[in-house]
Image 1: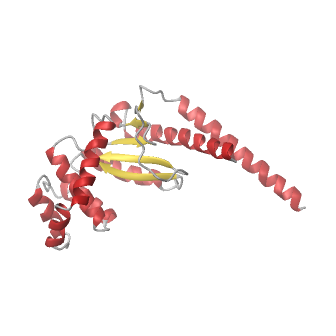
Image 2 (image 1 turned 90 degrees about the vertical axis):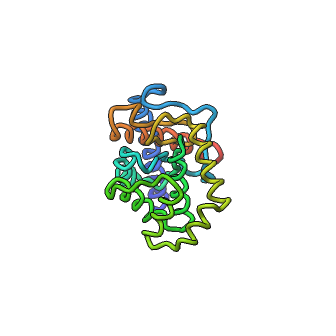
Length: 223
């Protein structure tokens, strides 16, 4: 009886893996490299989680399209335990660097989820301008953060290093706009490659499944 049960489980798992591979291939065939997404060459992955598919969202707080995408990305992530999701602020100009610094200060404070939303709200709902040292510090103090702590973080080598890395990544990913998403450092897609954000998320999904299928193959080979 136990042997029969184990055989049924094995068959179920095999069918599941097969259907996942077929789905990934059929979904991927709907979208074409060079059209709905582009390859990043050379690849530039960030993750240390080799058992997950890395997805990096590149954004700019003052971008209304990034603000619009935020809840859609969060909804997409709900059933994606196999995704290593990261945010990274894109930097293509001075004011972008200030908002990137705000992101990393929020991260260093250990309050990134709440402050990430608050930064979007301050700009897009409250009409705040966050574009220099003064406005960055003013934002955080308005959120109840000690001013001296914010100033220390603003000038800290760790924050400066992260801002510089974000600037380098923006160049490596060869972005011409935001929002954009990067999959495993290999592929990028964005609303300007497709018709709308919903289709962009479909492309993202197909790229993640493509990389996930490859990950599963690699695991089988190692076994």
